[in-house]
Image 1 (cartoon, rainbow, N blue to C red):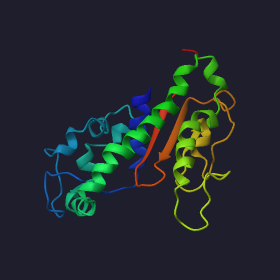
Image 2 (image 1 turned 30 degrees about the vertical axis):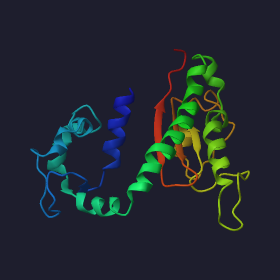
Image 3 (image 1 turned 135 degrees about the vertical axis):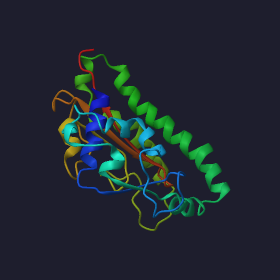
Length: 209
């Protein structure tokens, strides 16, 4: 079920897109179109794109037949070059482990409850480890007048949304429960308070199991 949802979302996301850029070393020439013998078609999610039982799969061909795929690895290299070795070291050895720790603490809330109890989990209770981490980090915010750990959510602040609420533009984490919205999935977003690292994922919820 989760894999089906992932592939369906991938197909929907690409609807209307003709030209696709990927950071692949298969070719460093951005003018050369990548074909079926490139690493593109070896990606599992790309291979699933051609499945006939996914959406209107019978009308689709292979990914590289339906889309013009080009390598944009040089553009990515220029971005990577802007990050110095010391900055990468801090990010990998300090920032990433902290964000990972609080992310796992948030997802652990789902494991603490049984299938029946999970229906009473609220968005805010799941998001709490991430919100606390983010708010505490913002206490070091050096911008004059910046609100530290304010009451509302700001751009980049952690967010957990259940079910249909994940599709609402501008929706904020609330006291909504898994059961109250009949959620079969949840979305989570988080960002480190003093850096560029951010993460977002969708989780399929198994009720009663």
